[in-house]
Length: 149
Image 1 (cartoon, rainbow, N blue to C red):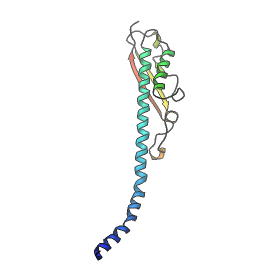
Image 2 (image 1 turned 90 degrees about the vertical axis):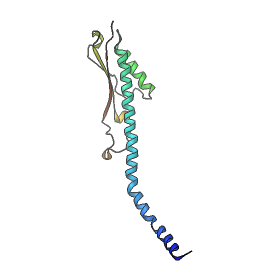
Image 3 (image 1 turned 30 degrees about the vertical axis):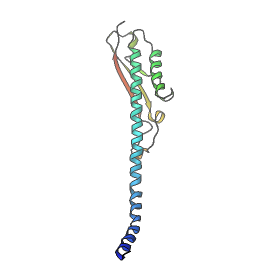
Image 4 (image 1 turned 120 degrees about the vertical axis):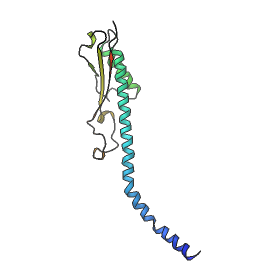
């Protein structure tokens, strides 16, 4: 082994500390980005689930003779199919206008299903690092027109 080769090997071995320092500086950033992606991805999943439950509730509400109990059953079924129990989201769902059961054909009926992030989701990232606050309300809403009687 030549003298230059030995010198190069010794320099390479000593350079390992730089790698460790760089890793220690970048690892928290990479972990924060990873946990943030997981948290916000799960929030989008919940938003999509609430939107689907609102759609099912709206489909149940536009039928002639529909009741609030039937609408809530449709919402509960959609949420249960997605893996969310009845304690995870706000019950009962909101149906508007207030006189939706006696509304005329063609009236727009809106069903809104919501839940609080602290109840329905989980925080993988602290709020001070950009995580979602536990008081954040996530909701899904659908509007459909009432069918003929």
